[in-house]
Length: 210
Image (cartoon, rainbow, N blue to C red; front, side, top):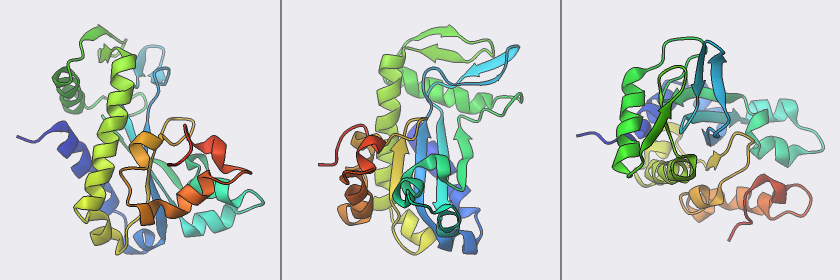
């Protein structure tokens, strides 16, 4: 039986595989953004609270070159400046559209398998869980997915080289527990060097690299 982790991994990988070869050749970083407790999507009549939604992003060398400035390294690693910040959302939450009920059911089953209890429903009918439990668990899930990206060789198969995968919150702050140990040291080296820089890097992560 496919786990929620396997499902998310496969869907993310399929979305990346759908990019054309030229685009994949230009991508240098991938991001997984975890939605925060206060994030919502929709309008007042159909508002979804985006608990545990994972959003795929990436940036290209071409886009970075176009936006480069005196703050080059910030533009390079902060997902607000990336070419694509929301290539796909899991569970799928289209703006003012129909939610992917199957994906939300899978997410809910995963939450309950972690021992989390639904506390209420939002106006769109999606289950809501205790954020103090769900938020760190989602980062751990992303850690496992990033590790699998590398261990399986999937990124090398798609991009012909390993790429760093950054796990962030919606402010673009890198969650180091989910990111640093999941990426091979040599792949994460450039990001690590930036995060240790005195000028710009230290504010972009929730703790310094180890």
